[in-house]
Image (cartoon, rainbow, N blue to C red; front, side):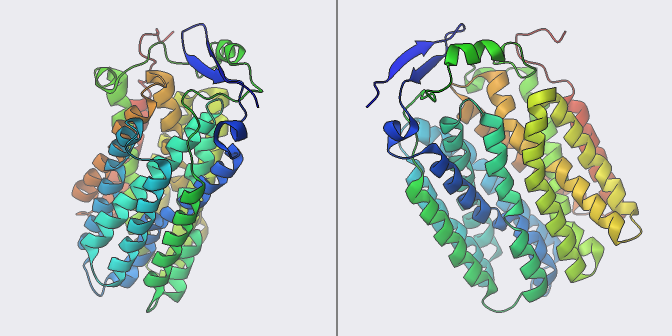
Length: 413
């Protein structure tokens, strides 16, 4: 068995080298990656699947009530990321424990919705999805420190496109027992994935990649390593932090509006489900594509392009005259508004360092909750014409905000 040793790179970062993934934890990191992918595939149904349910649930609740329930779900999901990161850093919550709790809550969210409890769906389902989301991303980041953005994009993409079968089934076959069966299936998938989840030793590094050479290469690529390891309160003093926070909040507002109102805007339940499924599929697959693009052109540029695309997509949706235009608009909306989350992990680490990366990401991820409130207050109370135009403006404003991003301590030029 190999013996682990520690080395530092040219800026002082610590790496634990010499052990394979199996030697370090008893399982391969690829197994953990696929377990995280499967869990995210199930957990995302609570968000993306709910939009498909809104036309069927209108006989119980009004559209504003349903939209506020989705907004509350989003607030609970996004607000869970930082506490989970802190508890895991303090060794008070294991990855498996977080996943099992998340499995119970995710399943309970859909079960309570089936029993006519909107608040139960929002709070239980949102917290459960937040536990799964934060744990899966945090574990994957630890196992793939040399390829963070690509692997995060792969796993987080499942959070979106995993709901496609549910969305189509909800639009076509929704009936008694549907939510109960879906809730049980989600709980089982996430719980089984949780049995596989395990973190590597702190600072673990894959033995086949020389860390010092990798660190030197990183100094010459578009996505450079942070100049300093920022604690959360230090990161929050930087203007870059708030430019990024605002851009993500605006993107989240646009995304949430599209999820809730696209099926209603279409008018036809089946076509609305198809449009929403197209949006979810484009979001999931787009995260992988944007992650690959960002490695080559830089994450800031990729983020600006995606947010601008999401903003412009709102005008395509509003003025589309046929099914083709509608599906093109849904595809562009999915590519634009949902892809920022896969870039957020990499941007956080590259701007504010890796030591406190999980907690810094957890605070930045609360921008999604802020976006949910913006959508509920500004967009949900308006007619579709005004709301789509306002959503488009918000998306473009997010692109403008993130265009101001720069690495703290490094000159822009």
